[in-house]
Length: 225
Image 1 (tube, helix red, strand yellow):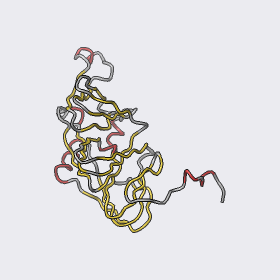
Image 2: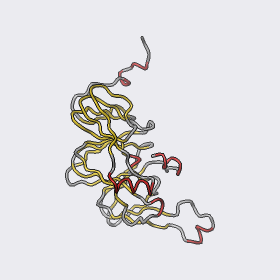
Image 3: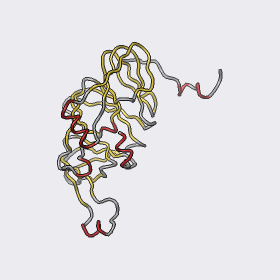
């Protein structure tokens, strides 16, 4: 059988080490030897002796998810084998989280992660309950974190002298040491006249980075994640 479909760039490559690697721009391969975690429904293929089990978020996490529509429904993948993960053909990226790091990520952008990482849903400080509550997933510990993004993300440095303002529907995440607050960029009068459609942003201050995707989540799409 001959076809460009069977070209080497489309062929799944054998794992050379345990853990997470990029299979291609749209999928992540995880060579499982024990346990790892992934968002529910993200597995697209696997081989070997693997089990998939729904993982709860705890009472606090489930409550926040019910109130805000945000959260991260997880499954544990255990055993020995290889699994491939993807989500809506979005671009995939891997972040190495080191001891002492803390990264806050929107639940819709999390694909999979090492079980050595700790995960907790937290309120974005300064956001109140506006715009659906602004709850994010905070990762700490040591390990690899697989992310998805609609398009190629933009990473913007934040400095004490130069805060960054981001659209709450476009932000993927940021280094968790940054201070956050909501910023209103329009006057009440301008908003009443229709405004620019960019009335409120998340302001980030301090020293670190913020990750933004090149599109805004529509309300309907945001609710599906």
